[in-house]
Amino acid sequence: MSQNKNALIRYKTIDKCLQNRYRQWTLDDLMEACSEALFEYEGKENTVSKRTTQLDIQLMRSEKLGYNAPIVVYDKKFYRYDDEEYSITDIPLTETDINVLTETVSMLKQFKDFSLFSDVSDILQRLEDKIYAEKSHTRPVIYLDKNENLKGLHFLDVLYQAIVKKVIVVMTYKSFKSTVENSFTFTPFVLKEFNNRWFLVGRKPGTRSISNLALDRIISVDFDFSLPYIDEDFDAERYYKDVIGVTVNEGLRADTIRLWIDKTNAPYVITKPLHASQVLEEQNEDGSIIITIKLKVNYEFERLVLGFGDGINVVSPNYFRRRIKKKLEEALKHYTPTEAPQD
Image 1: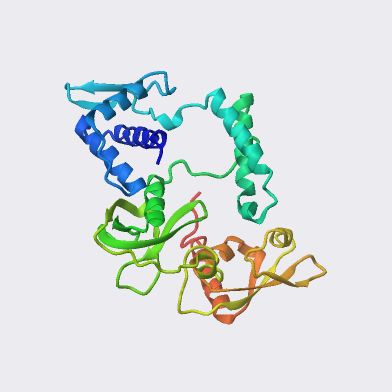
Image 2: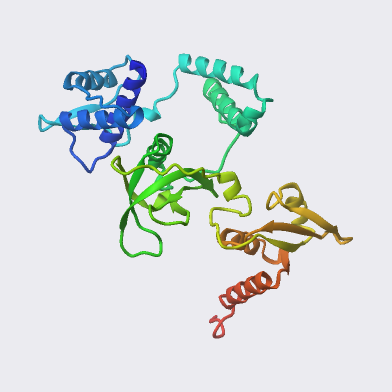
């Protein structure tokens, strides 16, 4: 790993530390955090010296890197940001940065027709739009849904590195159904995003089933280097092939689901299929359609069907038709007054 990359990891680590206002950070604490970060990324013992950490802080404070970080010392011992909202990741791009990114995107676009890049072509388009907006001081013309208040996103990089480095993680987790936090070891396989929410997919040691852990329910993450990582050939494409979302009922087989869609929603379902297995079975004179999809019924698919309201009808199988009917009947009760409304 190059010295420049080492330095960037240290700057980012110091930045994360100083954003945490609930802890007091001494120089020794920052040294230790930087050493742990370098070990995490490189996998080798690399103790950061006091002199290096002092120089890093000095550089972050200066204009040399463009950070001008408001790092202050209080009680002659502890470091923090004078501005609670500051972060080096919020620094605007310099003209040199923009030029380098522009050249990089132009080069990558030359390979956009290759199969290797087929899955990331939209990312290149969004990056190009962001660079143009920054360069021309205009607003981006590509706008994506995002949830700024979504919790747990700061764990993404840590968990990504654990997967790449094949390291067992120690998780403190609190599900929506639990009243207490639980700590356990976990073998991470992949990270999966669905409906603007991130999940860590893996297995608890000693169990056979695959687990999906929502990042917004994770309390803390640590590593256990003493436990061997069981390297399974987990194929996410195959595992999620027959589902919508992240919930996989491993004991179930995929069913053929027939759905009637009204004329208002039919064009949307045709142009944006509900699932890769979708087949158009009938196109009726009134504009409605009947489609079939083959998948395992799960919570996410159930919510998708209910979201169409009166624009959809489950034709078969009967067990799923009855389930949706019961859900709609229960929903209707919320709109049925128990007494006459008061004037």
